[in-house]
Amino acid sequence: MTTPAMPIVKPQPLSIVRVWLHGMTWTVLSSGLERLIALLQTIVVARILGIGDYGRFGLIAGSVGLIASIAGFQLGATATAYIARYRHSDPSAAGGVILLTEGLSLVAAAAALAVIAASPDQIAMWLLKDSSYAHVMIPAGLLVVLAVVSGVQDGILQGFEAFRALAWVRVVTAALTFGLITAVGNMDGLRGVLLAIAAGGMVRLVIMLMLQNQHWRADGLHYSTDALWSMRRALIEFSIPAVLGNLLVGAVLWYGTYLLSRAPGGFDDVAIASAAQQWRGPVLFLNGALATVAIPLMSRTADLPGSGAGRIHRLNVWSNLVVAVVACLLIAITSPWILAAYGRDFVDSRLAFLLIVGSVIGQSHVQVLFQLLTGMRRIWRVFSYQTLFVIPFGIAYQLLLPDTGLIGFAWINIAIWSVAAVVLHALLAAQLRRDGMRRK
Image (cartoon, rainbow, N blue to C red):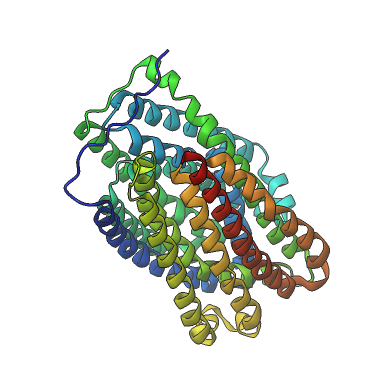
């Protein structure tokens, strides 16, 4: 049994900050264009489906995300960190991680699709309170498969630091998906929209597989049985705590949306919440996009004394904070026109819309703190911090949502995310100071 050798960082012609700026530029530009297309897409989908079915679409999308995050076992994050760390110093270890994460993602995705295909009527009745929507469950299952498998491929390319290639993939496939929805959505309602999104996702997956193959050959990666087996520890260090954390957080947030669909406002309230979540999306997506640059760089330099990991984290903190605050202000100013674009049924819920959007400032900061710990490969610590704010969310949703509906949902989100950001910042700062003192 072998274990990967300690990484040997080769001299680089660019400083770590310049590498971060290069990756950030491509990532931010592509993310901005992709989210712009996605926002236009949500408006088109809302107008195609109407407020009720748009609410059902929002609950389906949230359910797909939750199932994919569990079935995907956070293998994309595992691939990113270990490929960035070992692709130069230990090509067999990097190759082993790729094969391991790809194989597990395929098995998990197939299992999820099989469960959905086995009982679409029961799932439709349980999720949407109407078995007549059983025909949309298989397309939803395809979205789960694509989310799991594409998530791993995205993580692999992040590990290769292929920021420019990922930028082009994101923009091109987002535009293609928008075109497919516009062309097909009116023909078959909710099912047609889901199938159009699945078709765009398939094109994205194929392109990423081709890019991954190019980088595999360029870096001279290979694998051995021993190296493949030795990388099982990546599951313990990364995937297990990451999936537990995402299961806790994702399940509780999804449960809030599920309870909202059972409140007096029903799927109309879910539609408003989904629209607000979409406008939070540019900030969270940019946060994730910056993470695709920051995590591999912090992972690559985490063990080096006097490295740029700390500088990357500080740049990440301030860039995300500025983006979140400016974005929320712009959305608040333009919110009357935004809601009118979705339809007349959305206009009267402006306060709830703005509160849900505003909660992204706290959530974005929480994600940045977790990115630092991920880059340092301390995923079990991320999990321990995630548990601190999951319980308040669950209790508040259970006690308040049945009576307060959409406005209660909005206040719960902004209050808990804001408090969590402050508390976690203080806890992490204290922990890092203690770690520094131990090293001295």
